[in-house]
Amino acid sequence: MTKITRRDALALGLGAGALGLTGCGVADGKAPEAVLPGVPGLADRAKPKGLLFGAACEAHHLDQDPAQAAAFLRECGLLVSQNELKWAVIRPAPGLFNFQRPDRLAAFARAHHIPFRGHTLVWHVSNPGWLAPELAGGKGEKLLEEHIWSVAGRYRGMMQSWDVVNEAIEDFDNGHPDGLRKTEWLDALGPSYIETAFHIAHAADPKALLVYNDYGLDYANETTYRKREHVLHLLDRLVARKTPIHALGIQGHLRAGRPFEPQLMTRFLDDAASLGLDIYITELDVNDIDLPRRVSRRDARVAAATEQYLETVLAHPAVKLVVTWGLSDKYTFRNERGFKHWFWTSRPLPLDTKMERKPMWHAMARAFDDAPMRPMAGV
Image 1 (cartoon, helix red, strand yellow):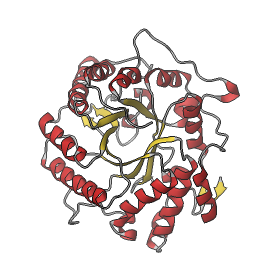
Image 2 (spheres, helix red, strand yellow):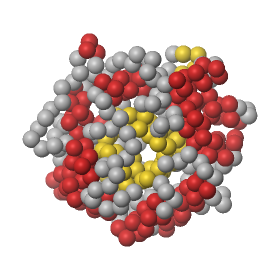
Image 3 (cartoon, one colour):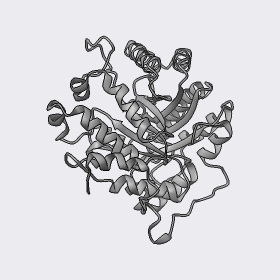
Image 4 (tube, helix red, strand yellow):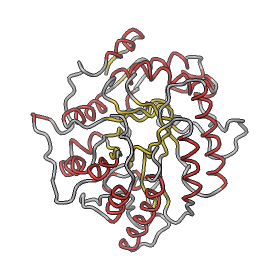
């Protein structure tokens, strides 16, 4: 745990080269061995088409579970911090940072020459209890600058991309003309907090690609249409003001059984790409809560929903990256309290709890195989 002064925070922009990061499967100089099956992993299927594929993980998934670490190395070409870089994890008190958990992920990425992706610098959820009073006390600008310089600066040069601002658009009409979600950040700094966050992130980590990330952009209903419009308006405003933003992150938390309109999704992708932005699918999984209880039927429906979705989005040349929110059903938030189905264990990811490939994995592999080629995303 380190006490950070403003000068220290700026100095951390020197990057991670001097961090001496260790851990996450590299203890005692021994890295988990990658299993090399006859069939290439998902990252190897995606790469020839100019696509990056990876998964979100927590540190203990990799350094306490050798099977998970081996499966990750077999399947993934990008490591995403699932919870490790959220304020609630690394900000125990004002002026204090604890980078133990994200440093373990960074060590794993460096040891295996895998690009690292950061999630997230600004979000209205997963914040420490002390943050809201500090923001209400007029310290918003100072806190935003200190946090982004300290966090993005610490991993400067290591990150393929950052989710700079996460979920700033509301799902419903809350009366704000731009559809912005009413959060402590909006109350403290007004709409400019979004643009400011991108500028600070670019200064702290100038080679990383910077992403606005949001959910609820996938399906055919009035709520989705309204949210798409507000997201496009936000992106247009940021680009017009020459904000350093490089991609739109579409989370892709799918729900099998909901109506999906490929043509309307393609039109939305066209609109985002017309702003000069790449498009990332950042948190792909499939909620199977509405599906039959029988595992074989559920898996088939999850695979079908995944394949339909990926066939549509990967046909668009602006889509450069696909990340699943977890790799194995063993580590999915959908089996945590508050998300879990009453009667069964959810199966939303490409690998099962034993790290075996499921129908969803095969659907993803086919989608990557069938995708057109495009220029590779920045790494």
